[in-house]
Image (cartoon, rainbow, N blue to C red; front, side):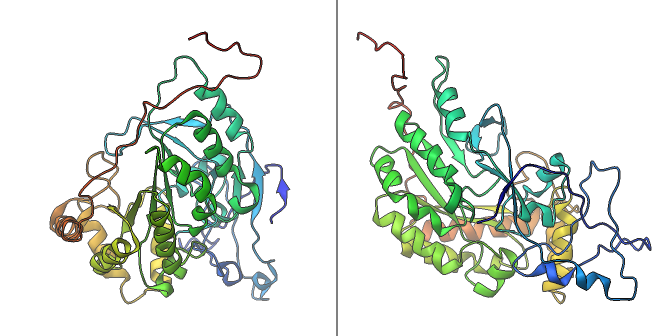
Length: 378
């Protein structure tokens, strides 16, 4: 387990001093990580340059290790007004994600902490130990109106450090206490650890769990999502959840045109056979610093396909590498995006997925009597 530390600033790897625009890669840092570069965040005035002085000095840099920092937010429920997602509130027990998914749209959030969206995002993680206490306080407010809360909107709630810190479980315990509906999105089979709570909530139609399966190829998964559960373990998690009566969704997020879109049919079939009853997808998004991090990975891991993949990405993004607009950012536009959407829809329909979508209940929500509080007469 990584050592708990106080937050400290860190600067990242940046463009080399020769001004070539190429981001320095350190092979020692790549093992088990998604990114191989650590560009400074977009808000930074200064950056660090790593230059090989000809004496193999870069080889002396110590192995990258995961560092944990504490964060003490004043509120834990994050609100949004996005018209193209199905929830208006979420909880992120952590900031940053050790899974290291190379395409993660949440990477740019690390720039707000003065850190890099590259290697820093997956190696400098923030925990929120007071998450459960904050949630209990917010749900106890007399003017609070319940609606589904998403766990895992900007970080994976079951990334490896959850095994030790158990913050996600503490949040779920509060949600169960209040009978509050919630959904989970994860790439980790560790979600099955909390089957006792999830089964209890599922019996009341208060929970839905989505497993993100982006490929069935373990080699691609290890490169693209290095510390997430293997595809086989994710499918096994779907099976375990479904067997326990927990409604499960398979999320193909993201679809990367030219890289994993050929797997749509096989992924949906495997997930259906494992017990998933619903399915969804998102198109690859490359906001802010993610563009350079993803393209660096693509050129390193798939040099023969890099040009084709980026050409398809621009095709589904109206000629750009990213489309931030509501309504199109999740699915893309143009003929390639249309074809992917139709394939996904037709396959899901043929397999019986999405025939019935579970609507989580809000009518069971109640505020338990708090310590020192007088019980209601009626």
